[in-house]
Length: 290
Image 1 (cartoon, helix red, strand yellow):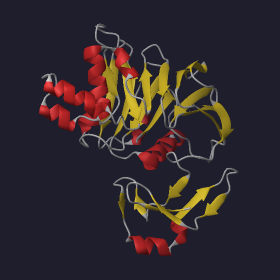
Image 2 (cartoon, helix red, strand yellow):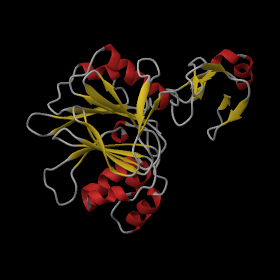
Image 3 (tube, one colour):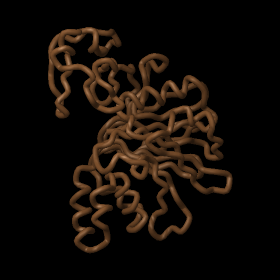
């Protein structure tokens, strides 16, 4: 799960905080993080369970972009240590680092963890507590950058000191929008203020820059489309009085929720707001109307 963004270094204020709040509520809320580079070329990361989205207004990055991540914990402990992004120095490169974050779940990472645990390369605590992204950052630092080729799912972001970033879109959501003269990249955008977006395709690799835009390195070209399919990989929206995205817990009994149709709605392909009429249950056991 999770939500991510790459922001131009000078984009701050209420509009940007509102975008980050949207990402956190959509599929994050278990710890936020910001990453960027300082003038001396070193990486700086501010992250943790209590980091506010308003932090974007207080940082002074030298790099052209800022990496943002809001975690939805699915693997590993929910703690500051697993909050993203991670500063990663690939094996064999003494100082050439990049920032790493990830949206999705790398389901087969436990297979690699088990092997390394048996070989004595991982401790039991690392095996049990590290998230899949934390484990990937460690793999890259000990075995090399090509370890990023292992996962077959999720969106993996690298951001470099020279101002560009790479998106490895195996599956999941990642999009681009030109706001003013510069480009913003994010897992999704709220419909209000972002009417059309560039939607990156699965199995693609994208080079990105805030001034120069993006180019496809591998895979299909992004689609320029109406911004209607958002809030995760479905088009459902929910109001917080029914379900709290910060905790993932229902605030009401399911029967009480079903009595109040106003708590659920969605947008169709034309962008029209529609009431929900029927129910389905997702794999977390949460009910949705459709």
